Image (cartoon, protein in one colour):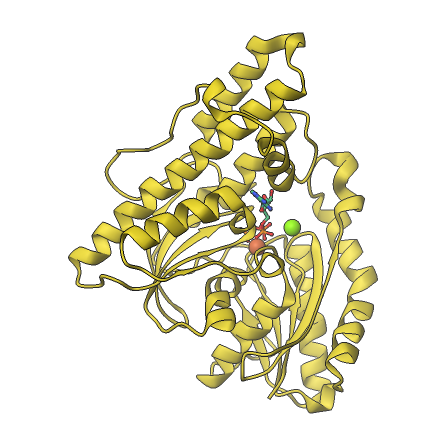
Length: 349
Ligand code: ATP
Ligand code: MG
Ligand code: FE
C-alpha cells in the first residue's frame, strides 16, 4: 500500500514513497540552493523552471529506491498548495498524470498538513496534539484534532519565524539560507553579551511577532559598524536565537494553559517545519514539554525541512479516510489549515 509523494512548493524538488505501515521506502530531496543563492532568496520563476527540469528524474529515483513501479502504488500524492504556484503546478500536474495513466487515486495535499502530520509518520502518535509549526512561511500554534481538522490558537502578526532567521542572517552577512547559518554562528557566541527584546513574552494570547526583533538586530549591527567581527556576529546570532526560543516557549506555554483549561492536559507537544531543525529551539520546547508532563515529538532533521515523505504520508492519511481528489483539483497558492482563518500574514514573503 505504498504512496508516492511529490513536493515542489518552494525550493526543494522532492519525491518519496511511504507505505501504510509508516515505513519510508525512499526519500529523495534535491535542494535548489545553488540556483538561488546569488539572489539571496528563492526566485519563483527559477524555482518553477528547476522543478520542471529535475522532477522526472527525482520521481524515477524515488520509485527505483523503493523498488516499485507506478502500477504497484496505492495512490499518488502531491503538494497542491500553499506555496509558489509555478512549482506547485509542476508537481501536482505530474502527480495527476501518473495517477490517471495508471488508474490510481490522486491526493491533493496541503503542504502545511504534510508538516503537521509528520509526527504521526515518525512516532505514530494519536490525535489530538498541540503543534508548533515553525517554517519559512509560517509560525502557528494549532490544535491538531484529526486529518483536515485544525484549530488555530496563535499565528504571527508579521514575519514567519524562518523568515526572521533568513533576514537576520542577511543582516549579519551569514548568507542564505539563514536558519542553519545563524545556528552555526550562534554555537560559538555568547548570548548574554547582546541585549535583544523577547517578542510577545508575557503578553496575553498565543500570537507571535518577529519584526521588532529583526529591527533590534539591525540596530545592534549598525551600532557596531566596522567594529563588528566574527565574535560580535556570533554573539548577536546567539542572542537572536535565544530570544526566538524564549518567545516560542512563552507562546507555546500559553497554548498549553489553554488546552489544559479545556481538559486536554498531557496531550503530546509536536514541533514541525524547517525551523524545527534548530537545536536550541528543540531543547527549549523539550524542557517545556517535560515540565508540563507532555510527550515531546520533533521530526528527525531530514523530515523538518520540505520533503516528499511528509506528502506521501499525508496522502496515506487522506486515502485511509477516502479523501480522494479529482483531476479538476486546482492548486491553491493560499490554503490555510483552518478554513475559518485568514491566511497567515507571514505566508506572503
Ligand atoms: P512553509 O512550510 O511555511 O510553506 P517553507 O516550506 O519554505 O515554508 P520549510 O522548508 O519548512 O519552509 O523551512 C525553511 C525555513 O527553515 C527557512 O526559513 C530556514 O532558514 C529555516 N531553517 C532551516 N534550518 C534551520 C535551523 N537549523 N535553525 C533555524 N531555522 C532553520
Ligand atoms: Mg526550502
Ligand atoms: Fe515547508
